[in-house]
Length: 287
Image (cartoon, rainbow, N blue to C red; front, side):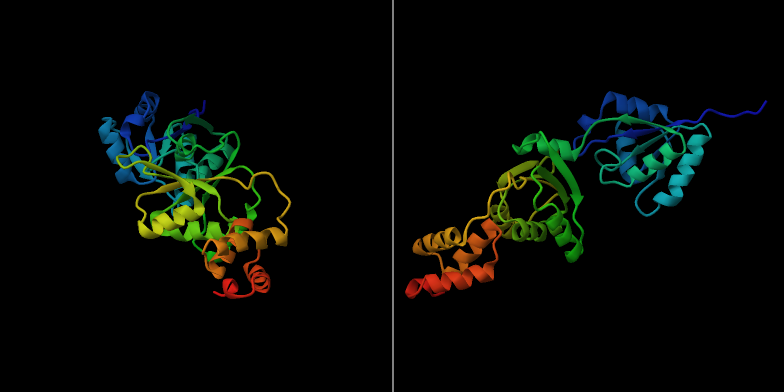
């Protein structure tokens, strides 16, 4: 008789996103029971294991070694071992290379089990105050300006609430690109969720740009942004010019008034400016 061991399983184990008290008893039991752990960063994984006195071997599994390590992990599981995959924070495979390992296991007939827990996406939605009945998770925007703009244009008419991840050093650029592409919208900026300096700042895109221009952002952000809403008939040029005129009469310079109205209505700024110049003749039409 051949000695063929039954394949093991892959457990997708969610880890805390800041507060270790959020790690579930079932997650602890799972890590104690598996043969080895695939961790995004074994140093971060070691802190978690030490906190709960779990003594299991780790191997690294992250973006730049996922192809070679994925095959290695699958080989071990097919040989009868069980493995848990963890990330530095949150649920593996959500905007994470863990999705490749799950797919590889599935294609090799390996059972994959979820051990659910923290997810920054759901946590941010729950405190955003936005409509959460339907939403779309868009992950990180590209660092390349062209690709970033293409992504934003693709979801410009999305009616559902949108969720993005963003790093602090890229936040202001991202907010400005969103404002330029979509016009002003409500946004909840959730940072450091479950950590000491947790904050949910509810404002608009223009308000967020102004705030973080004066206050350099810190911590990792989850952005929850209102969709475009029901499609409305575009405002007529007469309506737009009336809005510009009202702002000018309130004391705003023409150029600033045109920029504000164009941005809020996704209208072409240059054409609106020329028409406003023709309509607002005299001193009030000067910049």
